[in-house]
Image (cartoon, rainbow, N blue to C red; front, side, top):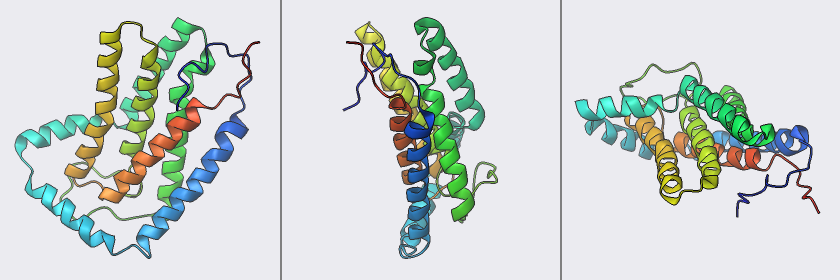
Amino acid sequence: MVDLERWANDTSAPDLGLRVGIPAVVWWVIVVGLGFLLAGPLAGLKEREDAVNEWLVEQRTATLNTLTEVWSAMGTTETIIGICLVVSGVVWWRTGQWWYAAVPAIAVAVQAAVFMLAALVVSAERPEVEQLDHAPPTSSFPSGHSGASVALYLSLALMAQQIERTWLRVSVTVVLLVLPLLVVCSRLYRGMHYPSDVVIGVLNGLVCVVIGWYWLRRAPRA
């Protein structure tokens, strides 16, 4: 289980190389391996994924187009970085613990590094359907929007467990957990990714949340 109180008595020093760098490299190798696996031995899955993307195109309506445009924007680089900087700044100011405030930034940064380098190596094509968004220069695998939204909003949801008022804590947590789901659905609906792209993107975000949350070596005060 995730230790939500791990910074309460922190006396340890950060170790980015051991706790962030090495796990990130290992995870990147795994992501690249999954990408080559989907492009090689499991390439037959693309036909089934094409059917999913084509079915989603058939479900498009003007209302859903507008809604998914807003949802997709919650996972853009500008939105993620902006929210991350603001929240990290507020948390640092309120707690005086910069190492705690840095958790979302570390999760997002590692996710972005793994995503961009994996996309560069795997270089997967996007679905052959009408795409409602401008395709970024990166490849389809893995989904950067999905990974970034999971990395940020899940990190913030873990932080939100420190909120004392129950109704507020629950409300904030639910919203933060729903946002990545909306981003994932919007990327599929708008024809920007195959299902496997968003699945690996979500996994990328989850792993990077763990890396960000456990980036300190614990040395509890006696």
